[in-house]
Image 1 (cartoon, rainbow, N blue to C red):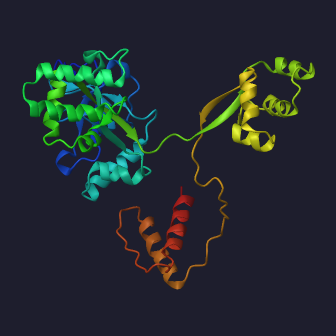
Image 2 (tube, helix red, strand yellow; image 1 turned 180 degrees about the horizontal axis):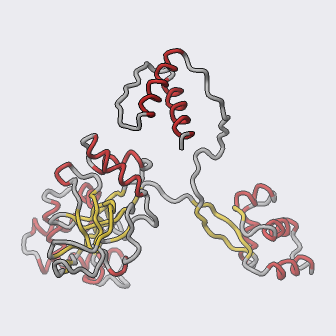
Image 3 (cartoon, rainbow, N blue to C red; image 1 turned 60 degrees about the vertical axis):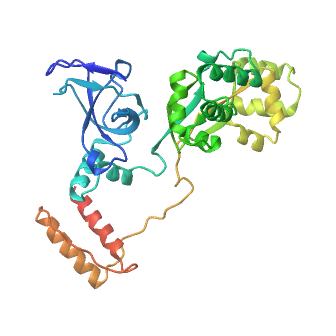
Length: 359
């Protein structure tokens, strides 16, 4: 773990003030972390970052509250990595979350969760892998690799029971060339005191363990095709009758008019099979790539604009009461009481419109 010693009161490196995500009230406070040189200038308030937390320095998701260059501590840990390309929380959202924390006696993380879409939280996985540098598996098949590991265990562990349990863990790990998640390996090996044996294998240099982070929400992408030759060259190929199949010509003519097109749309509108696109790629006319698209859940919905409804006597009385409080330009607590379907939303809408008109 990287710790930098700081000269009290004179800090050249920027310091990020963060709040730990999913923390209890005991740890719901502001923490200071150094911004490493590689991330200098990219860490901004409202971003999510991974920071080492606690004695174990476990990687934790945290929200950046602000950036400063002052700190009274003698040493600080560094931010591990940035999660977001841009801030997910605006300055107003950060201020709102801090206000909610005080007003509703909740944690900062609880307040933020209300603002962010579900599924965007970061999951932490511990991945166990064979230490290939130590056991030197280059050119070894699976069985030879197993024997290599067993030979190492035989030389370094005198207890038969101990070696047997270590072998059970390694046998299970050998099923996963790219590594296995900690709890999944524990269940598969079925060994008591699993964590202690893992610690032994790490100390012996047979395995390594690393933290990996992921989110349940992935960027939405589409598979598109595009021309990989100049337009003039494609036109010359078509006009010179060097491309004879009409299906291929239809595809190329579509791409001549567009920078790129989703392959699904080409197949549909040009009435061709995926094989036609693959053939054009094989001959070097087109290529494929994935492009990110913005999610819009309301894209295909049409909302009809309506005029304000005439309020009922009860609604009108509520509207006038709230307006009187607004005119005073001071904080007033008002409870709008009504069962579902009684018309509270219309009261809210007309009051919002009234406030917007006042600027």
